[in-house]
Figure 1: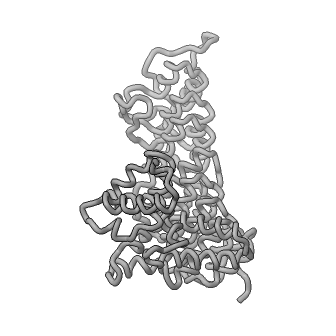
Figure 2: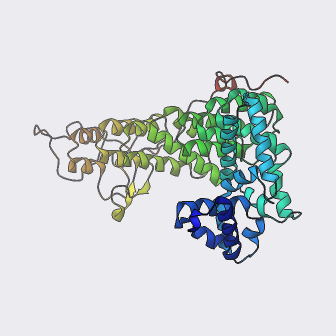
Figure 3: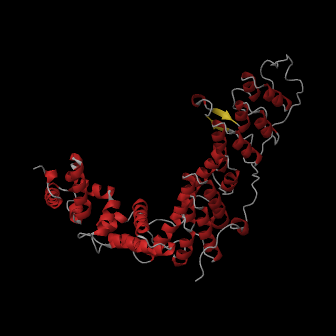
Amino acid sequence: MLLIELPPEILGEIIRHYVNDVGVATAWKTRDVCDKFKVSITYEILAKQPESSFLGRRWDKGSQYVLRQNLGSYIRYRMQHPHGARSLVPDFVRTVVSKLMAACGKSDAATREAYTDMVINLIVGNSESVYTAITAPLGTSTFDSASKEFTGDAINSTAFDAAAFLGNLEAVRVLLPNVRVQGREYSALGHSLSLPALKGHIHILKAVLKYRIERGETLNKYMVRQAIDVAVKNRHTGCATFLLNVYTKYCQTSRMKDSYVFNAFNYALRLGLNSKNEQLMVAAFRVKFGRGLVALYLDAWDHVICSENWFSAKFLVEHGLINPNQEYRTDWVDDLYAEWETPLTVAVKTGQPDLVQMLLDPGGDPNGSPGMRHKPHWDAVQNEYWDIVVELVKRGAEEGYDDPVDESGHCVYENYNGSERKHLKIRPMIEPGPTQEELFHDAPDSCKAG
């Protein structure tokens, strides 16, 4: 008789002895011998093996890797039958799911199963302490620190976070009053704004922040920054715009030196430029920085030029964010021959006469940067951008090469007026941010009374 033909209880005993003999890591590698072995070995390791099987030998990193990679399944199995495993995390999941179901008005078994899977996946995906809470020696400071995410106030906080992730406004209203100020001290799911930002639930974000602000609470800047980052990375432009406006109005300080904030702002700006979303671009530009501001604008300028995003390029110019005479090194044309450019000279190379004219109107120098090997009008001639050549010469472009002619044979230098180089400063024309009433005019009621 073959092993796979044995009754399940006998096969299970054989598998148990096998795992105990060769260890978790080796047994895990042999699961693929056949489907029946795979099921039996997986169940034996994740559902029945004691903690010591994963951690008994410090040099055996393979067994620890198996546990780390299968934490979700491990917790699910131990919720049904602990088999000697500590009950902290399984009990925590069970309690959170019960609170979530009560807040959502659900009681059926199918919903409980679905919510259990969701909470476990969220904990495993977002908590850095779940593995420690399962494996750290009891009574140690390491375990005590990790266990705080799965006891006390963390239960209410995690239930609230799960409701926010679902986008269930009624459940959020019920659970929000029980959550600590500033989100909470400990939680298994990170900061409370990140999960609705991840799913694009802007109505949840508005309800939560309206509740916090109306109660006079000081918003946690780090929490809002994280939510902005999550919304931008998942391309939820509405959430990103709203959160940037909230950050500018309630969280921003006069001097910003945090590189994380700078990067989050830059990512939000890029998303706004790429999606041609004016509201997001304006919200991003309201976040003010000291150092690196001009460089950031020029980087945005090069980005939209390289992607031929003329809509966003014109937006930057129209809102006074680009100094047409600002000299900077660029390699967007040829990285082997990087040279001094200005936004105007770069615009000339695009062949977009409207864009060139927009940069000339506020005082752009038609002669470009002194460090250029070629004058802007010569680049226009070389590429046969005759409309741009005419406009540059009218604005005072210097002659440096033979006079070109247009298709009709007429010299394009006919109306040479001359001009003086103008040094301009950036004067952003970004309207003030929305008021509190405008920001939350369509926000749902935050929570239920009491």
